[in-house]
Image (cartoon, rainbow, N blue to C red; front, side):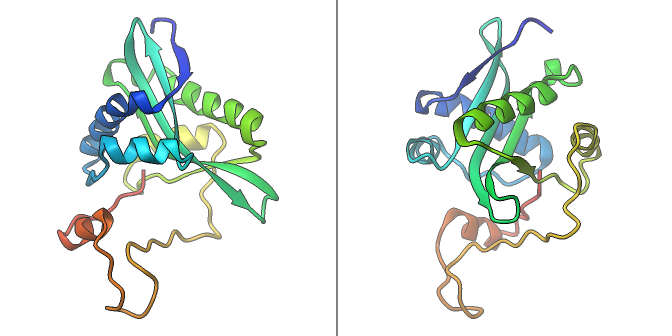
Length: 175
C-alpha cells in the first residue's frame, strides 16, 4: 500500500464521503438514506465528523464518527458509525490505522476515554478485526432504536427518513 495520509473531513468532502459510505452500505446490504446536504448540515453542527485516508490522490478509507458522553466511563467518547476501506487496500491494515487515527485525534480534541462502534452479527471479518484491536462485545448493553417521537405505540409517528426506511421493510444492520 502506498503511503497514506489522513486528514479531517470538511463539509466540502460531503460528496466523497457519501460516495464511500454508499459503497459500504451496498457491500453490507444496508439501506442508505443519507444525502450530501444532510451530511453537510450534520458536519456543520458538529453532530458528526470524518477522517479521510488518501494515497496518490485517491480516497482509500473513510471513518464517520460522533461525540458521546458516558457517566459510566466518566468522560467523552467516540462512536464510530461507519468505517469504509477501499477494496484495493482491504486486508492491508488500513482499518486499524483509521481507528487509531480517529482515537488519537479525539483524545486530543475531546479528551476521549473510550471508543464505541456497532458491527453486524453476520460480519465475521469486521468482528475479528475489532476484537484483535481490543474491542469487546458489550455484554451488558442492548442497542435500542427509536425512529419516531417517543410515546405509546401508534402515537406521534414521525415522517423521517429512518421511518420511511422501516416502513419499506428495510432492516437496519449494525456495522
